Length: 186
Image 1 (cartoon, one colour):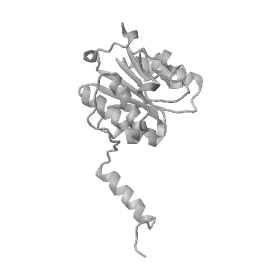
Image 2: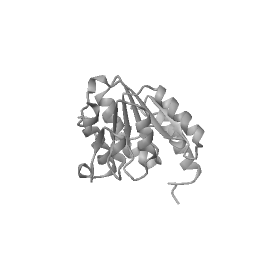
Image 3: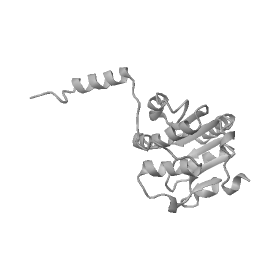
Image 4: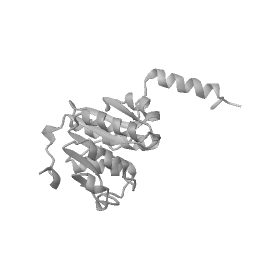
């Protein structure tokens, strides 16, 4: 049964990763995203993230699609988000929140994905059928994110957070830094 922690990798083709935190939270989630894409290279990985993260997230090679989330969303708009996520037909939903609020755990549950993995903290585990308990995490946040991959039987080769930027992004940043006079010799 899917409720006893059993996970069948061969049925996973469509993955949702829920990460509603800020930029730093997204960055420390990149090892998990890389591990998922490495294990399921032909799968579609969708990231549900805050609106201000989506542009950067969409340019990462481990993410195939992004869904924007507005934290000030009204209940009717939240219900529309749930309907749209359900239409995604996800085989696996991953909740990356390792904290007490249950909104992301409920959202993960409402995807109706056959496999739902997340951290079992403060009774959030009732929403997952694959749970990472407190005894399984106590490293850096990036290492703890990889605990979610470990629960899926994935042993990641690359544990370093990483952000990919293209040359036009680099040029824009360098131009901004130069315009601010940062790094200029006195």
